[in-house]
Length: 555
Image (tube, rainbow, N blue to C red; front, side, top):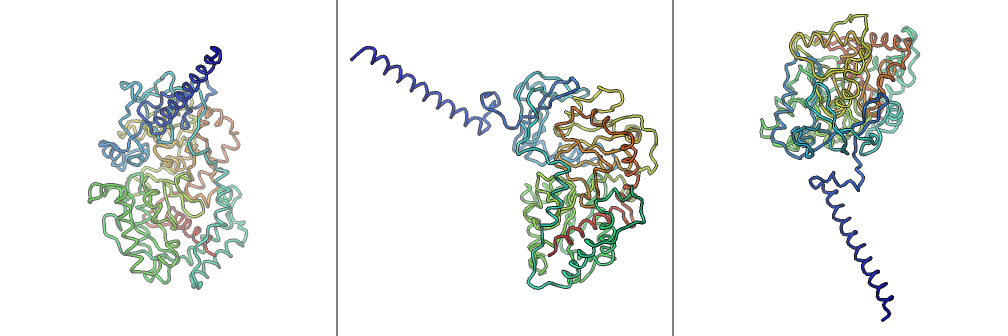
């Protein structure tokens, strides 16, 4: 055989072997990457879809954080409960904790074990570079150069949420029964009257601008007061049922339960007269039952709720009539969306954790305000209705380093500008709490940055102190969304725009700021709890949003 031909054949054979070896190596590396093999992040030849990074316009380096998560952590319960069991008079600095099995609080870095790296939700990942330190914190972060990207697509803007509300209000309907009942006809008539509400001229234009449609709101509220009837199930044992939790950051659900079960205007004893049916359980007490009442996992909690539904569905015909679509619940704990997602899929859910990316349905569900209540006897304790008019601070934030947004916020803005007071947690003694409130009262803008979840008590606190809320929490649906035009008195900043925060705030004209501040003063009344409910207070506003959802889902 010709030597040249033999050489060419051997050369081709070596090339085939080389290609086969590269293919096998690629498959192995892919499998390691797919199954999150330890140190898999070193396989840099594969793009990481979950990279967190932020570019800057103020000279700071962009950075990312390591979300090393595990499915179990023996210390997690204690660490979560250390936040949940704070005394009720603590300053509203501590947001709610993330679900177990979704976060590892050991803060152990596989790259530099002696320097802990902040834990992020599992939809975020990292690429490494140099490692700066957040001032005043033991948590380190990692700078990177690529742009912020989130798994599952871009964040939904407030404008897109507004559009979705219109679409869902028109499309999401209740299951039509075979024969329309008297209650159905009453709801149909109410819907017609709301849509054809007479124009209200007895209010200032500034006050009316708080609302999406003030005339429709007034007519809807009037009809709620005169017609709306609710049946409260008596079934269910304490402590999970009929046992309101009225202190702390989850108190909204407890105050609503407490006032609803005492109410005589809306509550009826005959379920046949009801337009809706209230499921009186506490998501906080349900969470606390874990490891205390024989429940070992979140699935056990869901099964407990499922058994409750089976009881009322067997005893009454109303659940099966519409598959629970004319039932509602009010729940403020972080876990509530997941615990109720399947069992109460058709129900109207009033949720504090109103994350549109986590199953919250605009037009069906109701966004519940997070109100930090310090006294079960006086829900208005420590709320000053006449804050200082002197606003010398441009922007204020203080709080624990929960989640991934707050470390980013501090990295870019802590000690960067004299008129921006952006710090970590403040002391929790009497002096520290008083100072926190003074900072809010003295600030033009209060930064409401998400913690482990999208909601935070800072939103309502900002309203109390006439400090324009700056909400940095992608996919968060603000409270009572179907009623208020939130952009008239609050700012929404996407997480990716944190490096431009100061520029965004300074771009607001003085005239616009002054108008937003006037509206904050006017909107306060709708976010106050009272021991004896008053017209347009938070009890009535939550109930109205539930009523409104029911009316606009009727055929």
